Image 1 (cartoon, rainbow, N blue to C red):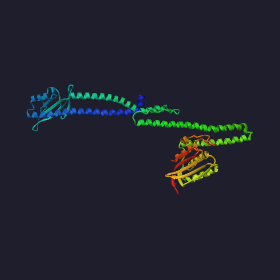
Image 2: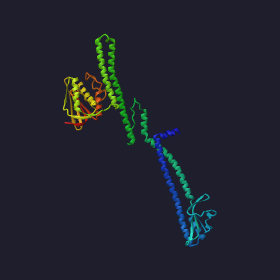
Image 3: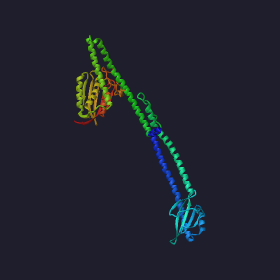
Image 4: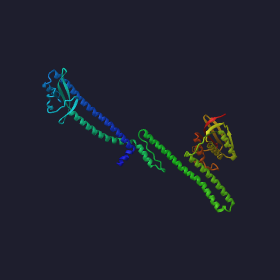
Length: 456
């Protein structure tokens, strides 16, 4: 019983129950219609036969003599299954077929049922009128034994076929339902086998192109994205651990150095303190970058948009850049007055990332140019340097987290998170970013941001 109740709760059980219920309802309606239709046809045919015989007999009796027993016997023999009884006005029997002897037949109007032994009949009673004068009764009885036997046999056949049909419907509905839901069952089984350490399983796509095939394809696509995300997560954790291990090892090494000789050697102490401060600053930057990306992935960073002039922000960042570097020529080109609706601090952070990368990978004496122009409905921001450039094969990967083209490209080592943060900021502002570069010919960053207005 419990297993049955559990089966009823499954989708296949519910669908099978629905199919079975619909089949039984349709079968009952169809069989009921057939049975009632045949029952009506047979009884109506019998009543029409009685009516025709009654009309004929009444006319003949009036033409001759309603006591003409020879006529009665002749009609009875010719009809075969129709029997007569003629009554006087005081209901005395004047004539009756042999079958009706000792059989009580009530004198009632309409069509009535009658049983004689194990045989079934219907009968009707009519007044006999001679020129409007009531002169007696005539009763016609028609046998219905074969018709009723046929109806009983039909009802038995209908019942048996309905039960067999219901059983066949259960098997068929369950088979069809299981076959139809096979992709879903396969998805369930695959989902049970998938774990965080192994999501390489995929569903086989077969059968006609229908909704379940599309569901299978969608599930496989979801698994592809999950596998890629898990791989990225594992890589992210591995890279983050590696990046954090280096400064921690340096700090630990200098701490041991301080413990051994720093108490007496001032030079050793100063060197250790400076190195520890530097590595702590690097760790802080790395942890802040990791925290930014983690919060960004979890949609926990608030985007506080406001209208401001992008050209003024660029001038501000350029002035700050000139204060911290003198090895490059930093300039602006064609800054148009441009009003945008964005988070000013995030846009400044994004701009600072591109400028810092340009400074980091441009040799002393090089040039860094920042430009701003309008292109259709976009504010077009460019950051261009004359640095060492980026190999063509590395360009598709530069926005990946912890990706670095070559750790020896600069004296200043980074964790490879800056461009990932910059792209996140641009995408959150519904912008676009492209980078054009080749080794020895510098790098050009092109950022498109939707603008709020334009002023001459």
